[in-house]
Image (tube, rainbow, N blue to C red; front, side, top):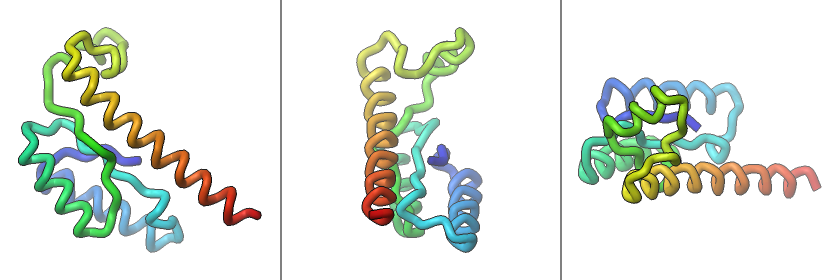
Length: 114
């Protein structure tokens, strides 16, 4: 899993990194981008389209750019510990999607080993 912002200065290196991993034998099915520091739903949609057109999976949802998340990190807390229900739900959506992708990749490995 690789977090990435919505700007091309984040997206292009993220895709280059994944391209390099694939070129070195890592299956695309093991790679997942997660959108973070996103300003609004339109920005998330454009970034998601860019990444999927490059051939990579993107976690559901996105982590919005919020001061509250930075304050949580400053206090040594996770973004899922946000008090505001909307921020907590946004974080939970992305994290659950990452967990689901990891479980799916692990299941594929187990099936391939049989």
